[in-house]
Amino acid sequence: SGIFSFIKEKTISEDDIEDVLWELQLELLEGDVALEVAEKITESVKKELVGKKVKRSTDIDKYTRNALKNAILEILKTDSNVEDLLKIKKKPFVILFVGVNGTGKTTTIAKLAKYFMEKGLVPVIAAADTFRAGAIEQITKHGEKLGVKVIKHKKGSDPAAVAYDAVNHAKSKNKDVVLIDTAGRMQTNMNLMEEMAKIKRVVNPDFIIFVGDALTGNDAVEQAKMFDEKIGIDGVILTKADADTRGGAAISISYVIGKPILFLGIGQNYDDLIEFKPEWVVKQLFT
Amino acid sequence: MAIGGTMLGKLGEKLRKSIKKLAKMPIVDEKVVKEVIKDLQRALIQADVNVKLVFKLSKSIEKRALKEEPPKGITPKEHVIKIVYEELTKLLGKKSYKLKIDKKPYKILFVGLQGSGKTTTVAKLAHYLRLKGYNSAVVCTDTWRTAAYDQLKQLTEEINVPMYGDPNEDNPIRLAKEGLNKFKNYDVILFDTAGRHKNEKELLDEMEMLSKEINPDEIILVIDGTIGQQAKSQAKAFSERVKIGSIIVTKLDGSAKGGGALSAVSEVGAPIKFIGTGEKIDDLEEFDPARFMSRLLGMGDIKSLIEKF
Ligand SMILES: Nc1nc2c(ncn2[C@@H]2O[C@H](COP(=O)(O)OP(=O)(O)OP(=O)(O)O)[C@@H](O)[C@H]2O)c(=O)[nH]1
Ligand SMILES: Nc1nc2c(ncn2[C@@H]2O[C@H](COP(=O)(O)OP(=O)(O)OP(=O)(O)O)[C@@H](O)[C@H]2O)c(=O)[nH]1
Ligand SMILES: [Mg+2]
Ligand SMILES: [Mg+2]
Image (cartoon, rainbow over all chains, first blue to last red):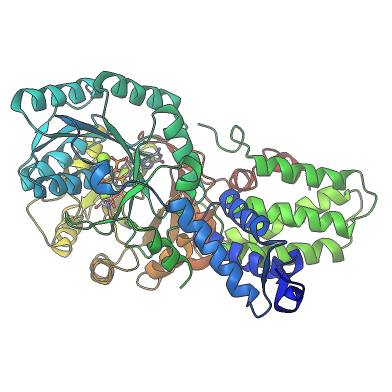
């Protein structure tokens, strides 16, 4: 910068951006970004901007808004796409689905079975939710409708044994993918988290998908954190995005565990699954 | 699992500390009140209370805390907590938190978002009512969710409550009609419905028609305790179609604070009557406002403080 740069440039001060940052933080909170995450994101934007030299003509509010949008895109960005992540690297490729109660695990498994079939692959489903009333019947009916084999035991039996059988079935029948449905469980329930860890030990899955509800508020952080810590998460699917959600849960979860979000569930039919794009969140949050 | 006592959040900790500062003060200090208000706002937002509602609430708390003279014998700290409690109580509504069965048959219609816990709660409530001496029957009108019939059938068989449904019928109105007819001599009839949300117009139409057909004495909105800011607008969409009489908040056995339910209460003006605290049939508790507030604020000691007033 030359001698006269002060004429063309100005330095951003804390005062310049305080109001707009507060406004943005409120927008994040109203869009269901968890409080701690919203605060950390705006704090990092503030750090990035204060002291920065910009053209005198710059509209600071707009500039700050853009910086925040970029920060969000950065959080949601991943290096690998869904196609690669879910590529069948070995046979059978075993995918374990985990999450709290009622988020949409079973429905999402049915959708993914269809996704794999459309790629010419043959899936098999493990009815390893042996706990919830009607769970085995639910996944069985999905299997019937889709023409996918469902491996099941009696209600109340050991879920790890069901999952193990499904993997063996796939091996002997030369199937490509094993999709393991599990019972919903609260991340705070240590017995059930331990049971999940056991299922994981027994089948040694190639990929673990956390299924979260897009309507979740601040608890999304606790859920993702605990499931990642106790079980490990490789990818995330957010359901019920059709319920007019702003997508804050996607930001909270990505921020906390840094794992890619693969798909959004956008309805109750098998085709209601779309690939997740970070731009979707920005659009939902700021329009 | 007990709520409130065990999972005290970091924010609750902070709020408690800022309130403690008031304890040492002879008079209510504006700066400290502002600090308390700020921590209160953060605690409530983290508990998933609607952001706009939080600001409205904290404004009136601040105004009262600075203006009102603490009554004799009450410290500034107790005074502020009392105001917080009163304002939150106002939000929770003046209507009774108790379920009253004052007709026969008393018809209850359950509605709510997908996966919120309706079916499980129908069974829990049927069980609860039986323990209170009412014989109840259950009707499945969910023709959408795969195996909804099997789920409700297994749940009600376990507790020996009669259930009507037909997995081959795809018209919920017909199911409701038949169920009404079948169970008219029971004390209570509970109707389970499919999950739906505010953007599913046809499903909302269906709910409205079901309500007209059944003419329920009470419509219960089942709210997932983990829901965030969407609680308000979703609850609004339901109450624009049917008259919500009460609310049940589920999944409060996890770490969510249930603030979404508070937003729903303030939106539809119906009281919370029960909370769900687990997947088992007896994991249903009568609503206790003081405990719920302790949970929202992340402070375990609200109840003992209130008892002083
Ligand atoms: N609108 C909408 N509903 C969905 C979506 N995904 C799932 N659902 C519905 O959400 C409800 C719960 O779905 P399930 O698949 O049974 O959820 P789950 O996680 O397997 O539940 P549990 O096994 O009980 O823990 C059902 O009514 C589904 O139809 C979605 O993307 N959009
Ligand atoms: N931990 C816990 N789980 C609950 C509670 N209430 C319900 N659930 C679980 O939440 C999941 C969804 O419950 P459902 O009763 O099937 O929900 P629903 O509203 O009928 O779902 P749809 O009919 O698909 O809309 C199941 O796994 C239940 O066991 C609760 O209070 N605590
Ligand atoms: Mg399931
Ligand atoms: Mg149901």
